[in-house]
Length: 465
Ligand code: NAP
Image 1 (tube, rainbow, N blue to C red):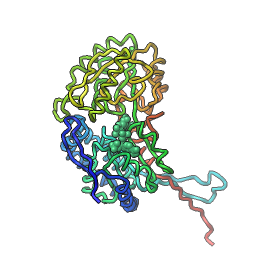
Image 2: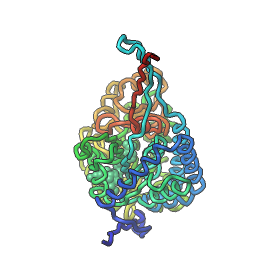
Image 3: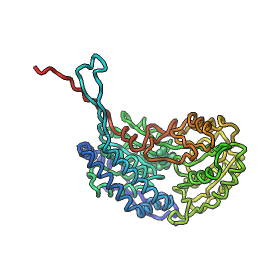
C-alpha cells in the first residue's frame, strides 16, 4: 500500500522545504509495537548510559545549531536567530535531563511508625511508565519535543512522538541525532502526520499509558475524554498579562514587553498579550514603547536583520488581520502597526482602548499584538489579569516589595515574574498552567515525576528458625 505524503512549506514564501509521510492509525500501531521493545530496553538500561545518550544528544545539537536553526526557521517562520536559540535551548534541556537521569530515586519508609508495620523495612522507588506518547506544536518545535523526549528517556521510557504537521523535519532530525549517539532504534518512534489521524490514534492507544500534549486549548481539552484510562498532561494556550505599576522602571519594562510581545511574531503561549498599566503611567509607557516597536524589522525569517518573522500560514495571518479590524470597529485605538505585510507577515501591533470582556482581553491572540489596558488600583489590575480562562505565566514591574508580594500571592497563574515579563521561562522550573492553560507540569525534573510510577518494596523480617 502506498503512503500519502505531507508537503512542508516555508510559511514566509510558500516554497517547499520537504515532504514527509502522512502517517495514520496504522503507523501509530507499528510505532507502538516497536516502542514496546524500546520500553523494555530502556527500562533495563543503567542510568549512566541513559545519561550519556542525553549528554551526547545535547552536544550534537550544539554542533549542528546553525543548520538546525535554519531548518526550524524554514519550517516554522520564526527567525533564524530564534531558531538557533531554540536549538541551544533544546541542548540545555537534554543536558539537564542527562543530569536528572542520574538522580531518579525514592527513599526509605519508616514502616514501624505504626504498630502494624513493626518488623518491616522498605522503600519506594520510581519506575518508568513504559511508552510515552508525545504530541507537540509547531511554534517551538524542537525545544518542546525536547521537554517531552529528554525526560522520558532519562526516566527509562520509550517515546512515540507525533510532531506538528507544519514542522516534522526537525523532529526527524532530532530522532536521527539520538539514534546516531546510541539510543536504541525502538526507543524513539516519530510518526509524522495529521493530528486528527496520527495524533488521535496515539491518544487513544490503549498500550500508551501516558500522553503528554502541548498545543491549543481547543484540541487539548478534548483529549482526556478520547484518551480513556490513562494519564494525560496538557500544556495549552495563554493570554499572559504584565502589570506596570507607578513605581515600575519604564525603560526596562518597555524593552522587556517588546521582546516578550513580538518574539516568534507573538506566537508563544507566554507572549505578552496584555499590558495592564497604572493609568497615570500610560503616556510615559506609550512614549517609551512606540519607538521600540517601530524599530523592529519584520520580514524574511531567514535574513539576519529580521526581528519579527511571519505567521505560520495565510489563514493565521487572515485571523490576526480580522482580529485587529474587529477590535478597531469596537472602538480601540491603534498606537502602532495594525497592517499586513505581504503573504503571512503582520506588523508588530500596539493597541489600546480594547473591549475588556472579549477578544484580545479574553482569548489567546497568538500573533504580534500587544494591548495596553489602564487600571487605577493594584487590586483592580490583579482582578483584570485573572479574568481570562487562562493561567500560564504573569508578570509585574514594580519598585515596591509590598506590591510584588501582593501580585505574587493573588495572581492565579502557574508562575509570576517580578520585574520581568511573563515570557520568561527557565527549563528547570515547574512550568505549566492553571485553569484552561493545562494540567500537569513540565521542566525536566517535574516531567520525570509525571513519566514514572511509584512502587513500594516492603520486606517483613521473619524469624531465623
Ligand atoms: P494544535 O493545533 O492544538 O496542535 C498541537 C499538536 O496537536 C499538533 O501536533 C497537532 O497536529 C496535534 N493535534 C491536532 N488535533 C489533534 C487531535 N485531534 N488529536 C491529537 N493530536 C492532535 O496547536 P498548534 O497550533 O500546533 O500550537 C499552538 C498552540 O499551542 C497555542 O495555543 C499555544 O499557546 C500552545 N502552546 C502551548 C505551550 C505550553 O507550554 N503551554 C507551548 C507552546 C504552544 P497537526 O499539526 O497535524 O494539527
